[in-house]
Length: 297
View (cartoon, rainbow, N blue to C red):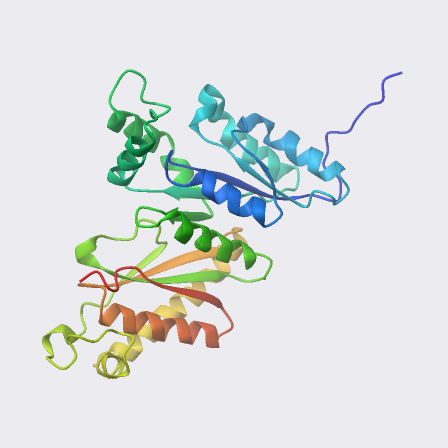
């Protein structure tokens, strides 16, 4: 007599993360970091097998508490099953998180050329055509991802540190916010959930004594925050993030990235970012600060 095995996950549901994104954007590095943190990692898993993987983890009676699966376009026609698989996981009681690795076309082209490997969707065409097809295929998935990491300007060690920080803190409750200062002349951060513009404040660049300093220097901080509207701007940003954080958490989104921009990313955005981060920490929110363009001039 054959023993019937239940396909309904038991009480020991594993924590499940789906790693996906653009080919060459750092999926393998992300998977390696999670493996080092003790996650059970499966690479190139057909999406339809995600519910089975979660069910097997549940049957392990808590011995496999955290599972990460790398799912991407290498699975070919199977990749279209991902949305259906995530819906099934949610129905079964899992709450999978999606980590999406992003990078600019130029960065992806350089990386593929460096390793001399074709793009999985390139076929007989150009590398750029494969990247374009993949980006279009992943557009909706990127929009729904819980964490988007832009690796265009990150090396392997910087990406590892970013993933490590996010998942070492993931056991804490509440929203985890990353505040990024940036310069508009270098482009918008593509992984930002919210973007605010502080270019309405006078630019310390035009004050000779302040020009060589940065927003981390007290003189610049005092100048920026002493301008009309600066304090209200920071307070408004803090209130906005506190407001949307409740909605994010209700929707299962535990990570948010706020980008604060000025012209060059050296003075105003840096000072505002530091002040905003301090206020949010004072309100009990877990906050990380990144000054993306500091030092580029």
